[in-house]
Length: 285
Ligand code: SAM
Image (cartoon, rainbow, N blue to C red; front, side, top):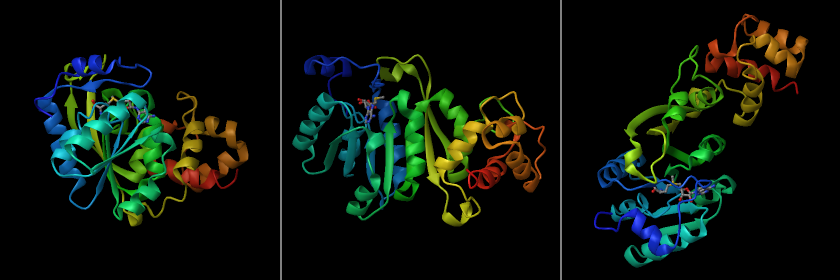
């Protein structure tokens, strides 16, 4: 991407202004971009096809194409999608498939089938939809060999949190059950235009093999319903929170079956303990 005009000038030329509601903080730091692209290529390996979420002006897309990859990119903003489509068609004909759509409505199954390979999904995510995108990834995890996402540092901390800490919550439990999560690198606000108020972190996700997650009997959706109940009031006991949603008898039975003290708080239980409880309770509603 080196030698390309500055983000500010490109936006001006296109008559576009960064949209806050679409989380448009564009990467502008060439060194960081090169490091991120290298990490994506390394993690994706040679057998996966790349799916990028929110390519924007192509800060990651164009160097990925330059490295020889073929990319499918999903962009919600029509102006950005059209601009990138034109640029890529001129420089890398036939290698960028751009889909003008909301990523949360994209079914990756047919894309993986068409590619005849698992997809590796990447993106500097619009921060306002990072959490739904992570749940979208989990729901469709069988289509993916892995993911590399830029997130707000605060959210990355939540993914890597351990039980008993304030960052440990619904997202930690869900991601930890079905994926291996690792922090890859930090990215400061100065790497973007416009500057976000917060630090960012790149994380990598690897779906666990089926045999590693064989004892988990709930779906991510069912687990999501369960953890909404279990973490509803963080200062209350697991028994009080679960009774409210599932009733006292069901809550007592599930806690007894799993030998879990009713006086504990959800945030002190491991993802496996919470999944076991969810397995009991979510089959009963
Ligand atoms: N990848 C570019 C970069 O790093 O410079 C842009 C990243 S910017 C943080 C997020 C991008 O996601 C924007 O291009 C925005 O228009 C796009 N976007 C926002 N909401 C989206 C959605 N629901 N589905 C797909 N793309 C979305």
